[in-house]
Image (cartoon, rainbow, N blue to C red; front, side, top):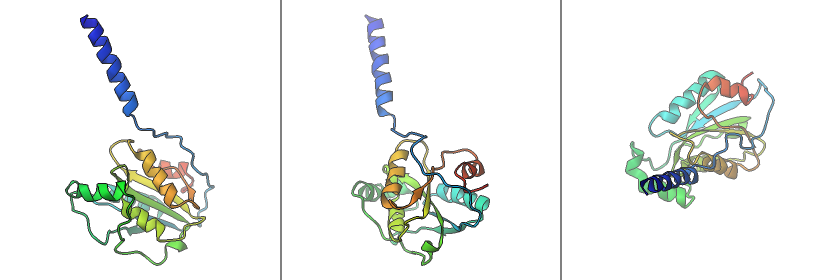
Length: 189
């Protein structure tokens, strides 16, 4: 009987693990481009704890892109867990908090690499506000996220696609060498 309970527990555990896995597909459909060294690149990012900023700086260093830090008009707490209710409300209700410092020239760029932490299953909603503030039709959008796992990564990618429907979308960063990823998506030669 003890073996039966152990077997039953093992089966339930495996089922729970499989059913709780995120639906992220590393081969999700993404657009393809050819390398063009004349493209103007902007790395726009929101970072609350510094993780997304570090990744953004690596991308800037590799590409020579211009950089812009997205800031919320109503700043978040330095520790996002202290603003958990606010962040959850924004995410679950698809709210658009104001951006404090919208630049005037985003439409001048050909490629917009946009970075965000994943907060309550989505990019920080202030990033969506930023993207929806411009006509990005025909622009190349490259999302990148900082998050400890791939859980909710697909949902975050889908949200970026949703708010920039008339743009070309390249694959997100999944870890590893930044320059190698940039070559794979044809931003670097």
